[in-house]
Amino acid sequence: MDFDEFTGTIQHRLELPGTGETLRAIRATLMTLGRRIPEGAAEDLAASLPMEIRWYMTGAIHDHGQRFDWREFVSRVAEIENADGADAAYHARVIVDLVHTLVPESDFRQLRDQLPESEDDENWGQLFEIVDGGGWGDPQEAQTGGSPQSENESTEE
Image 1 (spheres, rainbow, N blue to C red):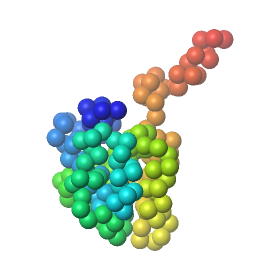
Image 2: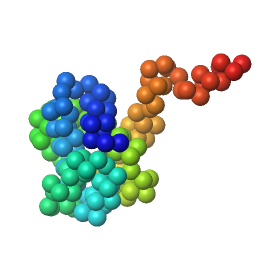
Image 3: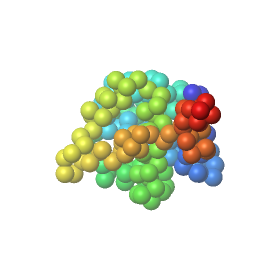
Image 4: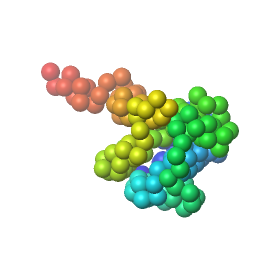
């Protein structure tokens, strides 16, 4: 996936009016995530992303491995994106879901291992709600209301 496909997919999924808003959401999420996880984990995760997107997690960050909880993450994303907290949290979930489809499972697992899911103050599991719910889904499935496999099965009968 190249830069235009990545940003276009995010813009479509978030129903944002323009590229500027889309890039702000991507930048806010990935820079904040890059600050939270160790540098090596950020580099591993970013390696499969388009070069222009990868930079948000690696080149733009010089202070990796900061300790902050989910609420602080959302607050930082919201501030950078200039959005309210609920929108920022949703945007981050959608962006992380797309990242999940592009990176090796081992790198995504490493990301999850860096973020505690069950501690009282750090419910990072919220970041992975779309991923854990099965992901955004196949574009054809969203348009037709069924998976391509089920359509083929019904036409063969």
